[in-house]
Length: 377
Image (cartoon, rainbow, N blue to C red; front, side):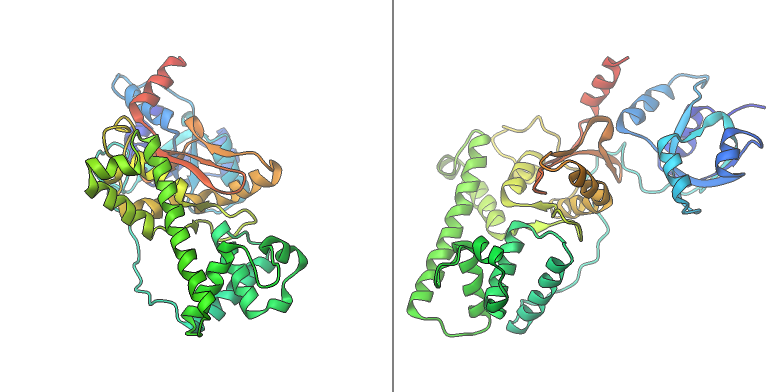
């Protein structure tokens, strides 16, 4: 009986992530572990994909070994873990059937991609919305769900406005409340609540609001200047040589809002302005300039989709991230090299600081990783 080889399996179903129905040889290890059949998608690291792309160039096919996979039908935790830990031996497979239509796998494509999404029109927050938002934030805090720094500031301002007598000693200390004085960042949110709810501000509050808004603009400008200097320029230099690009960057910075990308979890995984600029100015073609980061690979996504892709990836690994931080407080979480995260045709490197801040996120360079893989043999 002729056996399936790793190369044949890769060409049949692995290369394009096709759904494969596997029938196992009676009495084989796979038959004993998983039963007579499974429906799976095979899983490859980036190195393994590149090695297989080279292997299929040589015939006759001859390689055998274990392939990791994701079970699509049985939903058995033990089976799921075993498939990802040990996998299925190619020699144990009696037959492979698969869907004729190719699924969307863009690993070998150089085209810019778009991600499927549902767009919902939203209206600006009203005064009544704020009370609901406070209730939702308070519920997350009670349930131990971590808020990003900006979310935390907004929540404390909301509590200071709606339930000041319920503030705990720890929260008052965090806010640095002295009389009516609170941290500027929280004071800003507090005054914004009053403005949105159409409450009259005193002359001093009007002045405070104006100064706090200007301070936030200056702070964003300083963060942008920092990352421009990393790119071999500065706010002043770029303004002299490419005012349109500076205006484009300023517009992005002004509109950016820090956001948490995971839905639940004690540690908030979030992207702040510094992380946004670090990632986008290196890996988003539209925000690059002067060739400083020309050697870094661009995302193969529309700029507007990059954050959504990042969010989808964080949601897919958040359980692992939370467990890591629980066991390793104060240590950075990283996925790179052979542990890179696979998403719709590409492998990504990601580093998350112990606070939950995303510091690095980029699409792996395929050619460089191929050299690295070859150097290990």
